[in-house]
Length: 220
Image (spheres, rainbow, N blue to C red):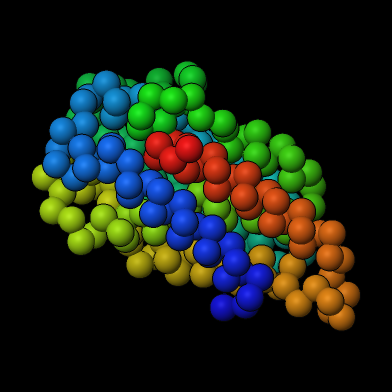
């Protein structure tokens, strides 16, 4: 892992620790998260997933090589199939229709209003590296939080379903591909011909998107 990417990973690790320390984490692990909280969070998560897929469509158009376009197309299919199926299962346990979700106020698991991924993406413009950085933050945090929950005994089947979906090794492989793609576009700035301003803009977009993803999980 490059030093540039390692610095972003450190931010993810700090956010994961903050998320794990929030009261909802204990409530979730013990199966005491109320249906109302699940429904509010699911509504926001469906919206965030839709924003992510829209961003993936944008980044596919910006991708510099056919191999990169193929990679983003595969990731889009993965997100639609696996995450879409998870949302459908969770919605059914709550007596909701998934097609009715994703249109309300974005609120995290602790009820606070959260910023949107669409807003984070809007600041990335049409520059490939900042868009990639924005799209990396949310799944990377979710994957790390889910992996952290692997050591807990989750009594709520919904929580266990969420944890297994995001902790899946296939998600990890997809994330490593995105990290490599971002590193090619931003790392080794000095002497590499990559503008340093572009690298910093990508870092800034990553941080904004990470804050958005953390807010959905109750991190301030």
